[in-house]
Image (cartoon, rainbow, N blue to C red; front, side, top):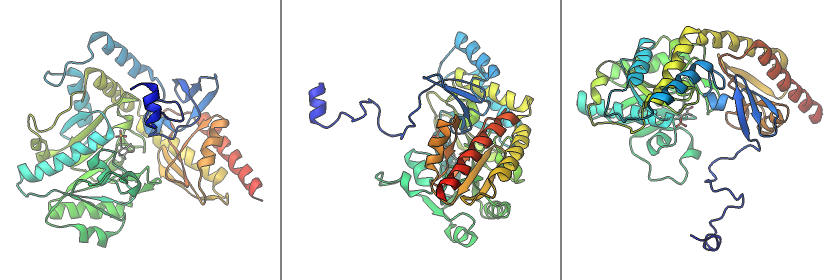
Length: 406
Ligand SMILES: *Cc1c(COP(=O)(O)O)cnc(C)c1O
């Protein structure tokens, strides 16, 4: 279409951008990153305590992953899943060696990993044990992705607006409400699906007794347990996977964000008889697990395991929490400081959007988790001095906020 036709149809955006306006972007253009640090196009430096939303868990451009990617770029990029892919086999083996899962399906994003989990749960019930069950129970405030099935599974109405009719077979109940959960279970219930720390929902950890109860309900009623580890996985909470804190094993779990250190990749993992539920042709992805993507996955897992980065996340997370509680704990705006390992929320009594912008002006990148929670997601290799610097910037912003309010 010519420019004048576009204008007549109101198609030209006020911003002059050719991109869909799907993101409210910060007024920053970041052009370089190394470790915990980012640089913008004006040469300003930022301490990164958001890690691209829990993606760059090894920091920016980690050497071991970079070397694996560069080597693979020289050798082979893509052949399709019609052929054996050695990196995919090796990355899958590393994941099954380090988890209760027996098999891995690689895809390209978190939503696709959850989509695969939902499909596997239904297919298991319909093809392996012939129960015909299809319904998935999820929880309010959860976030599971943006495809039609995963936004339906998500327990937040704002992601569903304008997308009806939504797929059938999903029920959402309040978290930690055992009677509501029990009354939602029927002879159609295929699976219960949840995050163990609701991340987008405000950094709310699932109570261990509640998870034990879910796990027992699943066992007693032939229901599958699906854990969404997309944000909590890959060492972030102080264990490789958050379910390892709880002493339970999911039937299915999903990974994405930190899995490829910034290379886009997701995975759905399952154990036991579930492996039989997908046969040749029942699910697939053109790009899932390419030689390049799985080179990134392999090097990422090897780094986390060899360098004991989950343990490091636990230690640095304790230090971050202790510093935050000491420097911000008594502040009148602060309601609670919560989280586990290096996923931490500063829950406030007011909206915190301006803290995010003010932090950027002072060289600190953080994000929100809902309107009132500042979310901190530093990389797993973050140094104590970097934590001190970030907490210092946050403390100065909170101190000034008190002064302004008085
Ligand atoms: C980010 C996220 C997703 C969706 O991942 P995408 O890669 O954006 O599709 C799903 N579940 C959780 C818990 C997430 O944090």
